[in-house]
Image (tube, rainbow, N blue to C red):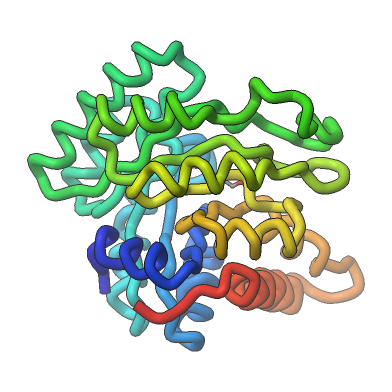
Length: 277
Ligand code: 13P
């Protein structure tokens, strides 16, 4: 069943854990996540990213997600990840998503505020939770570490986080503290000091994007020190890819891929110290 994101994140904030946000691109990835959430009795955020609509038709994704979230005995949030077009975000809200992300983080501050505020107003009138982003989390994709502790301008500042939250009335905020999306070589240098400062001053849930290959110790610390939602995707598909072999047939490969994705999620539930809600 769908659960109220506000209630789930309140728990995460009070008990210092993070809830994984997992992107699905087909029924297999979706069911893999839901089966583990059911087994472990833990909350899960089922996300479809706007950029993944090239792999799955949006209407099909909505039908699948709603069907399987009801079929499994789970507590789930249905979330639109990295929404950029107003039309798609509206469509997601009108089709029953209870959480959406508006990502205007690559825009200048004032424009990000204006766009985010418009979505927040639309969503709140319909009782839907909104995540937004300040400080842009870029793409890694094997370019190596794109950030270092000295490279201060990649990190969200405390002042902009506070101002942005106040001006937009966003329900949760994705901040940039050193991770990037996709693969990267080595581990990122997470700015835990910045996380602590933002956490101390801002009382809404905080989100970490680009969880994959960020290092278990880093992610565990993030979950314990103020991050309430961690987005993970690439590590699931990498695990699935590694589980394939030309030695076995298609059916065996399908089973192995699904199991590898499930194992990865079990692992991350532990790393994030996710608890029942
Ligand atoms: P990764 O693919 O790097 O885990 O990032 C996922 C993400 O942030 C989705 O919003």
